[in-house]
Image 1 (cartoon, helix red, strand yellow):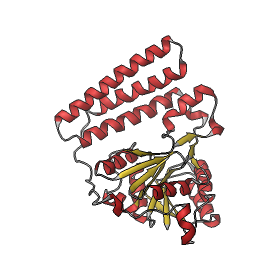
Image 2 (tube, helix red, strand yellow; image 1 turned 90 degrees about the horizontal axis):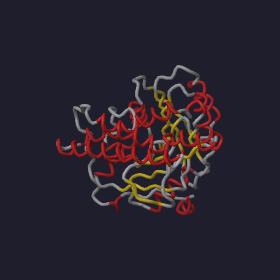
Image 3 (cartoon, rainbow, N blue to C red; image 1 turned 90 degrees about the vertical axis):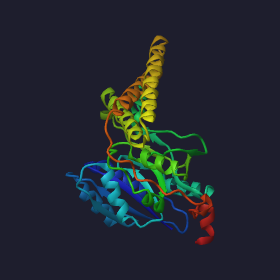
Image 4 (cartoon, rainbow, N blue to C red; image 1 turned 180 degrees about the vertical axis):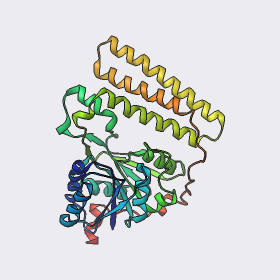
Length: 323
C-alpha cells in the first residue's frame, strides 16, 4: 500500500526540515510505503534547498508541487492532483511526527474498515513548553482527542488521513477557507454519510516557539478559527432561518463564555480565564463572519452506498501476512 503524505509550506524552511526528518524516521508496517508531496505555496526562503536535500538523502520518494496562488487550499489541491497513494495523510510544516504516526493511523483504519478518515491529537512540543502561561497561549495551535478510538464529525488538518477517492469525490478543499479548510472538508464528508474516527495513539507534536506564544497571536488564532466556523455556516446554510440560528448560537456562546471568563477572574483561576477569553473571541468572530457573502455552495459529496464497501487500510497485524 502507498500512503501519500501531503505537506503544504510557505517560507518555513527551518521547521520544514525538521518536519520532513520526522517523516523520514517513520516506522512502517510491512507492505506499506510512503511518498511525500510537498506543496510549495510560493516560498522565497531556503525551502527549495531543504527539499532538495531530503530528496537526495531521504528514504522515501519526495515530489514538489509549486502553487504560486496564495492560500493553503490551493496548495493542498495542487498536491492532491499529484498524489498517487490510496491514503492521503496531511501534515503541517511546523510539526514533528511520532515515529509510529503513520502506523497508528493505518491501524485505526484497520480497526474501522468503513472509515473514510482518521485523525489524531496535535500536542505542544515539550521543547516549547514554558509553564501554564505558555501552554495556555499555545492552545489554539494544538488540539486533543478523546482517549482511544472515537467517532468524529470533523478532523484536524495537521493530523489526519483520508481515503484518496473520498477526497477527490468531495472536490478537494474549498479555496474560500483560507483557514479551517480541513474542518470544512471533513465535516462535508461526514454530513454525506461517511464515517470519521479519531485515535489518541496517532500523535504529532506542534512547534510553537516563544515568538508565537503571545496574547496577540492567541487572539489572532481564535479570530481565524471563529471566522472559519462562521463562514462554514454561511456556505452550508440552506435558508435564512438556518443562518439566523447560527448567529443566535454564536451570540449565546459569546455571552456564556464571557460570563465564565468573569467567574474565572473572580476566582483567580488564570488558566481557565485565558481559555474562556479565547472562547469569547472565537464566538464573536464567528458571529461577525456570518454577515459575509458566499456566492456558491460547497461541492456536494456523493454519499457512500455501504460503509462496508470501503476497503480497509492495512494495520501492523494485517501486514504481517502481506509481507
